Length: 259
Ligand SMILES: Cc1cc2nc3c(=O)[nH]c(=O)nc-3n(C[C@H](O)[C@H](O)[C@H](O)COP(=O)(O)OP(=O)(O)OC[C@H]3O[C@@H](n4cnc5c(N)ncnc54)[C@H](O)[C@@H]3O)c2cc1C
Image (cartoon, rainbow, N blue to C red; front, side, top):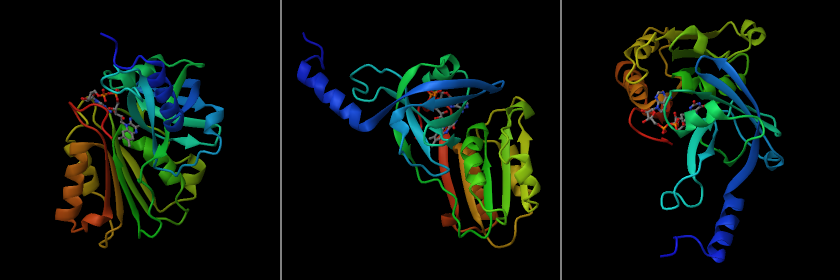
């Protein structure tokens, strides 16, 4: 019996589809930022002219997949764009220990080649907001950094990010800019070994924020059940309209490659 995708015609078709969908890049730099955080910089001429906005993500081909599973694109995993200057795309990958995405980031070396889908996603700062509320975990802080950097100095900002330990914080607002933004209330909480899933301590951190009476816009990313709990708090306890709460689940226990 011949294999499912073995003819020359099928290979050509696959190659044409891949060319349209995926951009070839290579790993330029891998840097350990904290015990479980790695910065990976991707470069390649295919990135020239590619546009993005802060809050968007890319999907990377982190491993091949058996043809019957995903013939065209292989195993994709999703990562927020920390920074992108047209030639270099910076990602920050959290090593949770399992899964092809975490494994890829652990073993990535300069020169490695891979493919990615163009930036996508509608998580974005809403300039009309009275104020901005950010809450999430290690993975969410990667999307919040560029969103915070995109806000004007006079924006009012509340942010609570929960990570396991101080070593897993990312510098979300460079210090010189933070000094120029006294109205920003940005802080971290630490789980110290507890799970990031259904994190009551992050809900508590948001509950204790001195938010104005009027709703702002909330951006909630990271673990899906924690996001639901925070949204419930805002809608049911603070009476925020649902449309003022933007959510983007990044992962949840037992699910793979959530997007
Ligand atoms: C829009 C979007 C943006 C994202 N941005 C980032 C980012 O910038 N940086 C980043 O590191 N991740 C980010 N993620 C999350 C990342 O895509 C997932 O964590 C992904 O599941 C990792 O793939 P994997 O192959 O390592 O694990 P998978 O094979 O997908 O998952 C295997 C198991 O690992 C566990 N798991 C997965 N992720 C985590 C986690 N973070 N913590 C603890 N346990 C986990 C779950 O139990 C899961 O069932 C983003 C996700 C989305 C949807």
